[in-house]
Length: 262
Length: 330
Image (cartoon, rainbow over all chains, first blue to last red; front, top):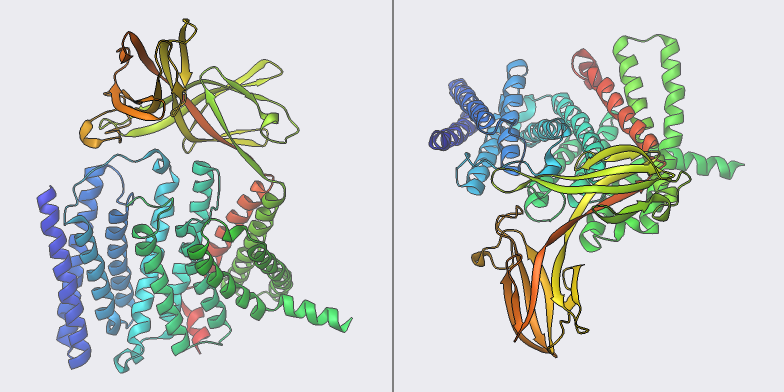
């Protein structure tokens, strides 16, 4: 199954990359057909990506949420899924290029980190053996994805092609992401209390997750009071996304701590 | 009176709250990078959290007023959910901060080392009212097929006034919770059993910690017990291949005075010749467990706060999509 998985993940990368380029091309040339092909490619990539998640689940007998690579795989898939669901309901395809290229980048980083081999199976370490694992990590992955799509909407709104995108769609994504990040942090704290005896230890992951949570909290207050809309709100959503990226990559791969499972 | 009102208004304003949030974020980022161990213990940081607590407490009281008023006005169901959600969210954070403060003020923790058969009176490690004793019956490591650890288990008996009350297995993710004291599987270690003839000519056998120095009789040489390696492979050096004892060895070194003579890896029950007719035999190892014990009177409040926060966030989210946000936009 390992070889098939390697082939599929390159297929996913290729689909997302091409979809992203076509979306951007559609923006530049304003050709509707570009968007149509881009959408088909994004859907194909998403289905292949889902197949990978299923295969990984069958391989390990657990949902693919137990280490940094699996998290990245799930995170990238949910990002595309959220984008596809939203673009079905709302006019947000102008942001398709940014979102698909970000997802392609995540898949690329995953390939770079694992060498494309997704079939390695290692037993769970005792600290991870907990029913809290699934809910803590799923909420984090979906929250990160919502923030990523929100950042995609924020970036494209700086350009003329993005002017059709409604600000409250970005705000909706941030709200959902914030709610899920809140759940993830609380569930993680409950778990940490059981596993290590401390619900909060200020380890790098906790600290940076809190910083991320704080910036979105400030954003939500300012947005609600109509104080910061437009470019200021967009910048905050982009900075929030960069913090999410640092909380994931920076903390997992640069700063040692309790969360160094990757 | 006017001053008091102004100070009150300043502390309870949302602007102050947001500034405090941004400050906490900034100093956490800098503090954790520069002083990772100590920063969050400093008075400065604790005062910042206290200011946040004050601000959020007052802001929550304000919100309660607003929420009750909106309840009386009989608005749509969505607004109702949303207001309650936001109120609960803030209330949850207030509870968490209060509970955290209770831990800083009255919480205690400590670590205990126990080998099989050893016991400890909890009142000797924690300042608690209710006395009970913890006795370790067995510490064991369970393994996966590949030799990696799958679980660490401390089988303990709880005794009160010498009487057995109950038997519990403490393992990672399954702490003991007894009369306000929680005990967690924190770590473990090994004592090394050795036999040798001492200087007075007596046969000696005992359990030693890693790093202990043995002084056998009939020689000037000393043996330092360096380390227990459960699964020894020279290619891995001083690191064990797996935690499972597939090839256990004791790493020891021999000295004469201050002079280092050599290092070796001894199997169990295999006499090691230190000098002519002087032997040391390592007969095995005895594991001990390390438990983290904690008394935190703020824990129920923090848990209630966490649940309240999650409930609030879900309620507020239920109202997020749909027409309401369109109205918001206009």
